[in-house]
Image (cartoon, rainbow, N blue to C red; front, side, top):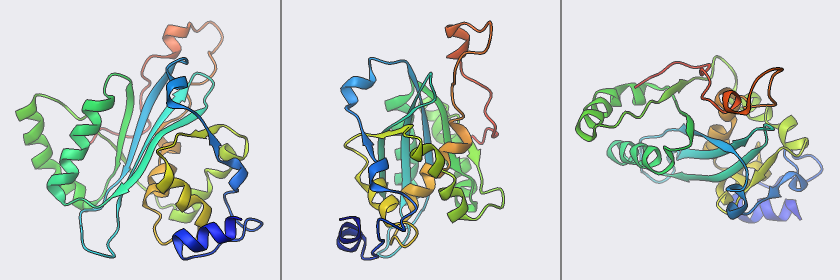
Length: 220
């Protein structure tokens, strides 16, 4: 059961009956099927810049949002990066998903601000603008931001590919998971993946799918 799963993988058991995120909310999808529906991509990154044992991970979530506002999580993972590796990862994500990428957000921290000159230099060298958006906690407690995901999951509007193991482990063990870096990045999707949504009256499908003005500011 869920209790045994959490204990085995996260060392912090959470009973299914009291868990914030229920196992039966984990809906699956095949990535091959995603190409059959119109969608745009949103990437959120919760950065950490240390690689030592016991340090935080960088969490990354790639989310495909459909016209109906459903979320298809293409990939969600955690990894430890030093500053150079993190910058390389950001450019790699932009290069890999750029054609459909509608929002690319990184949590604004002192560490990220310190990397800004290096990122700007790399942008000039590669002639490629990352177009990163700032996201911040806005004074919200991390657990509250994460719990704000519950209604969307409970309504069955979120689907997960086979490449979301790190995220699902953190969800099922929340709030006692050993790590919550991917879950934190997932919560930031609520700030930038404001649904493409159902067309407004008189709005064409082409207008609906155009990039929208983000609710956050450009960083670099």
